[in-house]
Amino acid sequence: MGSTEDLDYPQIIMQYSNGFLISKVMFTACELGVFDLLLESGKPLSSDAIAAGLGASTMGMRRLLDACVGLKLLAVEMTQEGALYRNTEISNVYLTKSSPKSQYHIMMYYSNTVYLCWQYLADAVREGRNQYERAFGVSSKDPFGAMYRSDEEMLKFMAGQNSVWSICGRDVLAAFDLSPFRQIYDLGGDFFNDSIPEAELYILSKILHDWDDDKCKQLLAKVYKACKPGGGVLLVESLLNEDKSGPVETQLYSMNMLVQTEGKERTAAEYSKLLEAAGFGVIQVKRTGKLYDAVLGRK
Image 1: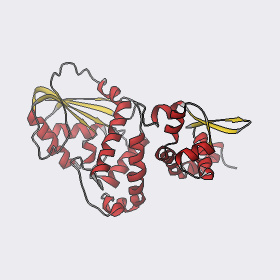
Image 2: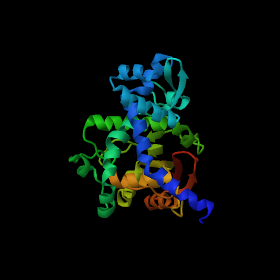
Image 3: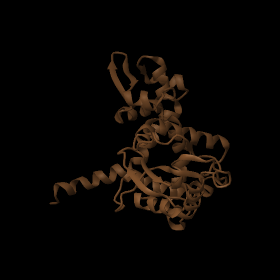
């Protein structure tokens, strides 16, 4: 007989195997407008009413709703008229388009772009390069190192990034006392070709992870040159543990960088090395315990 711990292994493997199924259920409910319809209705609705309102089949919608109940994204109440569905708090806050903390746009980017690219993960590992062209048959790279099929897709990605920032930005900006910096510049645009204005603090939010080390050094050197004496640069990134043991979310993000960009996620020591190579010193690292961490280098 195996140990009690051994008996959990098959279930763990099955949970991992089903991970993409869970994601697609959530993405599909968002895309079809399930959560928005229930929020707007102001009351629980039957599966027939939801299907009719969204132009979907009753059978398919019922199965989708039940799966969302299992995932705690919806709640169901059994009445004499049948099952009535309503949003849970997590769906009202994060999955409806009208919520200030809505993650709808990043969900759609993951569903329509990331999900398709990941079908070629094995090819990315074999070849050591992103798979956007293989997934979509186009080659269109933006200044951030990511690739898009159209301007519309790029705008959706940017909206998604803004939505993520709405739930984690406060933790990152509160990591250090930034009050001494009076001139703060949030770096964006075509920063490799455009000039960078003089400032006291530069914020590079989720930029360096898109690029290889040489490009990162090139960009940081350019920032260092523009930075006022006594100023600095704040990197907003998801940090790997120094022993590469996790966090698992960051490890998965690094795989996504492999599939979609030229970059990777890094440890605090690796980011510190890049900053030092550009001339920055007095480097501080703060792990927020949330999605993104902060690294501050001073000139």
